[in-house]
Length: 190
Image 1: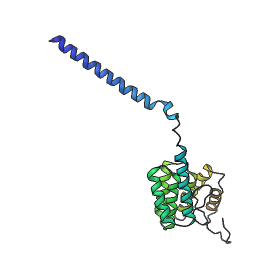
Image 2: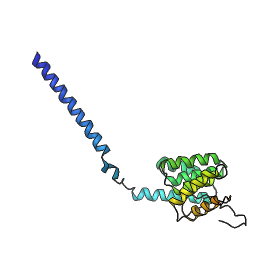
Image 3: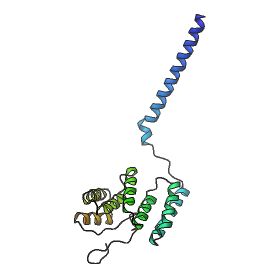
């Protein structure tokens, strides 16, 4: 009887040891530094083309000032591609078109939580914050300028905020202004 208990005890110890080795192996595999360096699989050509076409449609809708349809399309895009920053920027612009500045500011902050290096959204946040919090706007504009010094809209907005003027252009992408640019005091466009 003693040998039977000894045999069961040995099997139990063996199973616990194997389980612990498996757990340690999984922890090492998932926390290994090489895993963090791996490049994610690129999207297929079809996926890239589809997203590009969606972005073109969004741009066209914004240029036509069809904000309701643009917002609906952006929501649908985000169901398929949850990390699509362009669609989130379109939602921000649609909120602005509905005069929902607080909602647009909140959406900018949500985008920046996931993509802190997004200069365009930082620029838009600076423009939105200017009327209520000029210091936060100046900080956001300075950060946007550090991230994208080659972008003319970011540079212009940074200069205007620093000079405490109220003329800004909300920008969705490097080459696409979503809303009509604000007029300067002389009536010239930015």
